[in-house]
Amino acid sequence: MPRLCKTLDRFSFTKLVTKHGTDKHAKGINSWTHLITMLFCQFSKLNSLRDVCNGLKSTSGNLNHLGITRAPCKSSLSYQNKHRDWQVFKDYYFTMMNKLGGMTRFKQTRFKIKSKILLLDSTTISLCLSLYDWARFRKKKGAIKLHTLLDYDGCLPVYIRMTDGKPHDATIAKELSLPADAVVVADRAYVDFPTLYRWNIEGSYFVVRLKNSIRFKRGKEKPLPEKRHQHVLLDEYIELSHSPTYEKYPARLRRVVVYDSEKDQTIELITNQFTWTANTIGELYKARWDIETFFKEIKQLLKIKSFLGTTANAVLIQIWTAMITMLILKYLKACASYSWCLSNMVAFLRLNLFVKFDLRKLLDKPFEPARGRNGPDLLQGVLFEWGD
Image 1 (cartoon, rainbow, N blue to C red):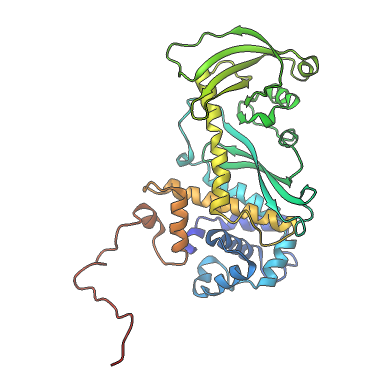
Image 2 (image 1 turned 180 degrees about the vertical axis):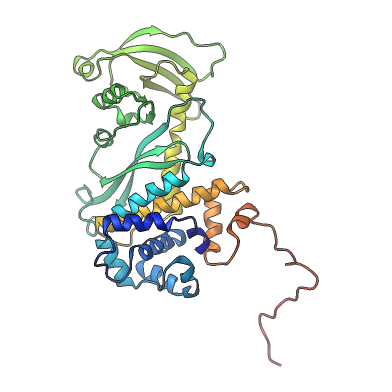
């Protein structure tokens, strides 16, 4: 844990604490201790406030290396989760992402296009309605939705909005303003033509799966190149034919039809990008699966499906500290020369959380025995002494 936290920039965090005033009139623990405690919760994946506090207390000799003097008590951690402004953790995530995410290690070279690739989707986390009464989903069910815009390079969020389970995905997409020349890839839940037309006017691109109910008028069909991928079936220009729909998007679209051999189905895609090849459009939509993988990783590897507090503030603090944890993990994975699977690396770090080691060497050569460990002069200690 001390080695992992060396990745953090405490100076930047201190400036954010001053900006948000989260240490003003603070009771019990300061913001830095709060951050380290929640990161310990994420790395260790403990289930309760008591477990988190007792876990830190049991490693009191290592707390100085974390920049904290004492482990928080259960009541202090609960109080701060309820009252400390979660925005400081959100801003710190983006500060750290700007610092670490711009490194070339995070760049993926799958696509030879200059546009920034963004993946848009949401995931639902079920909650007990009697405890989380603010997270209404259905009559007898509670849930929250994490609406996420993921940067394809590094697969890290550039936008997260938490709501209860009711808002439709397209409703949240209306609030998004994309960078010029960026391309957003989304499923058919985001087929909202006023939003798509606004993105088109703002100079952004989109690749979205077309709904079966959308009516359109076919235009010129583009010839498919001989060296195309065999899954590309059709590439043509279309215009929306239904009058109310055409008023929402009064411009030409491109329709690319591809075949998914794994699921044995045909997928229709629409885009406002007319210069890229049909192969690129199909591969971009295929890359959308990376956001599903991201949701799977945070739910399986981090503390994100159950929460230490029941207020919206406590939930948001836990979500953003989970994002900071994921940023650290992906940075370490990118820096390591060993080809780690993320789940294996998390399990490996969890076993050695408070062991003193050289983190870089451990990640580069995790299973190489220490020099002299198996040497002939190394004596085996006696584990048990039996009486006569």
